[in-house]
Length: 233
Ligand code: GAR
Image 1 (cartoon, rainbow, N blue to C red):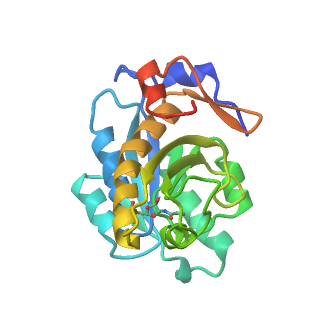
Image 2 (cartoon, rainbow, N blue to C red; image 1 turned 90 degrees about the vertical axis):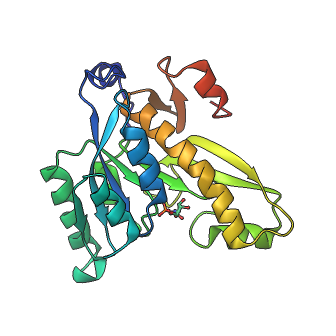
């Protein structure tokens, strides 16, 4: 995992005058996390701008959210491509032509190949609706309920070739109620996702994340109150 060096902090500072990091958000659905990122990026001092939204599913609400915010969108239905490599080549082409610096996976339900992931190592975040490393993969909330966990939550992590396995950037916990359903637990977790993801992207975009021995460290650019809101950092 590449370290993100001090030069990045200078290049993408938080004063609104230094260039913002150009972010592509990859989605497959409703895009409520995309909305949280769009809302955060509307602030003049946010160190990133949402420059492109890519969906592998046509007609999803996330595409409407992007259009409403004036962000260019591209729909690349994965079934239109011969194989995963061709699908990812089309994504890569759009990322290059839009001069994208960073990627946020936000409910993007396709597994990316090791080659694609390697090309974006240290520059791609994912959000997952569990406290990783518990409950990787799909049907997360149903599996958490079936396991009888009393606390669940969400995780933002840097993406590595292993599914839902990269260095953890930030986590938020929520209680699980005895009468929770998949819908009620998902909604409680989503509210935390919307709080956590913009903060984690800001850290990455501002060059405040470093990875050492597979673990994320935050640099001095992150205030102590921000640290307190992300336990463990
Ligand atoms: C979110 O809960 C996100 O964590 C999850 O899909 C939902 C997307 O919601 N992602 C995954 O499960 C990926 N493994 P959204 O489209 O409203 O942002």
